[in-house]
Length: 480
Image 1 (cartoon, rainbow, N blue to C red):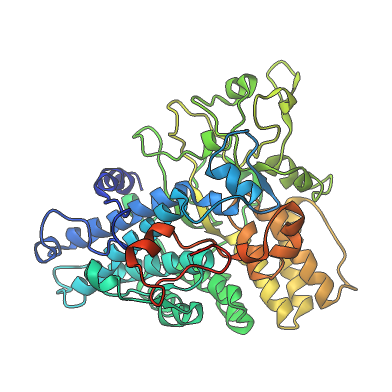
Image 2 (cartoon, one colour; image 1 turned 180 degrees about the horizontal axis):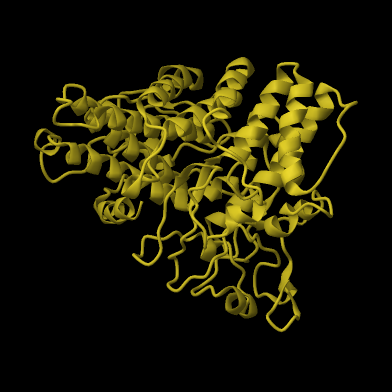
């Protein structure tokens, strides 16, 4: 997806600030939309602009996971990452405002595509179905993230003016699921191709739409539909990589059998991600050994508790959470000597020549997650023995074995939740897993979480701009 990434990097320079507007629902363009959407390439480029905003948003998406029990910000700096980690964040954080703007910026762009493409001539816009599918997939992904983060949010599915947007009230989560997320993903799954070639590799596929639909059903506790949908994904040609470590080996192609949908980044052309630097400790021997140039962020580091959940034979443990490494001289270098983080995850470490230019993608959804979600759905549907079969696929790959013959539904539920931590830590899922399963407060209260923090605050600036609580009110616990 090098070509797409490069265009996206340029497109992102035109993104408008949302600090003084509601949600900037007008597509970013120096020409009229009627002139913009004519050819197949016009629609393709417009969608690249939407992907570009997702690249910006997913650079910081991990911050939503910092309040979880797996992750820590270990450098003593007073910033949003520390405040998220210790539950002192407020409703006026720039992070929430920029996330709100990024998601609605994507929604604005894909709404424009969908409005204009409806009457486009398929003989001219030869990839019409694909573009409609991509637009609906991206809109569904954005709304899925928005409702999980903020709860009820304004539902906008057409191009409208900013003035009109300020009159749209928050829509109930259930309605957003039914009206947009579920419907869009169902449509996208039927419109999108199964795969791409060349420069288009990395765009949304029918498998990505189906897998995300399964996650959406699971999140809203619609376990029968989750089972049916996730089972379909298992017939679409995906497979677990035999070696778990290959998921995090960036010398290999990230578009492998387990890949379903990533946010794409590319080094060398300076369109890389920040993940390697952001999650790396401030420890010169580590930077030299792993060949990481630039300043380290000391954030999204493993908590002490995370080390205790892995069995000795589990190959995922040393990759997920480490307290040091053996250097080229055979000497163990402990991160206890680091100026900042004392632990690190190896999931995003790759050599970097230019700071902030990592080739590491962000895995929005991969097949290992689908396998565990299917196991969960089967168990909730009283198909415990079938659920065990899928759970064992993950554990066998990890090099650990367990006999589950006497396990009941409740115990297996706990085992699946624990396995998700082992398999998926530092992939931005733990916080949302805790919230959707109703375990967030009881798990995190000892760390400082308040009960109302299951939702993040609506950005204060947006509430002030609308200035009408009957249209846009604050989430409980976060002030006015």
